[in-house]
Image (cartoon, rainbow, N blue to C red):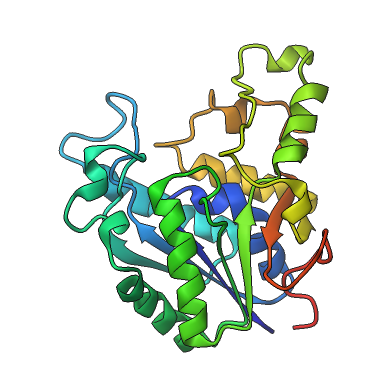
Length: 262
């Protein structure tokens, strides 16, 4: 049995990018640990969704635990930083925000968990955080440094396959069921080109768990959202493979299982 630690910026990020590998690891008998940097205080929520006086972070923490249970995580930890909001907003510079936290300080916090768990594998994000969100960029910086401090042997940077999404957008452009769903074309700030990706994990057997975990984050992912409104075939194309970069691997995709041999 190996231990997978998967590190994310906000509640709901875990199921979107790594929900499949989490459930796959769990079903194969490995230990799965979820670490989240912030409690997602600056997420958007519909009017009237929360009870009177209920803080959003409290709901999002509860949703994360529900999602983690669906995906097979045996431990959930929050590092305790404040959501920094989108890049360029005043919340980036607020005291306690993840974006303003010294990388070394946060890395030591994460490294302590990695050592305690004797982690074999850590996932974080690529150097642009997938799409440029400041907290996602910090997950990359903190995750990579924490792995150095803890001596974690395998580190995978979760990313988005830009070329795969472009092909899918073109192929699905005329699907009637997708009418009205925002199929925004990814630009160069979105994900990474396929040429730099080194691992592709087929998670189609776990798409039911992945979609169920997304539904657990009801404050952020509504039934009308891009994630849940698309038909099964499109969902499978968009989320049936999870993509990673591992330094020292490649060129090209050379791995299909983050825990192979462990």
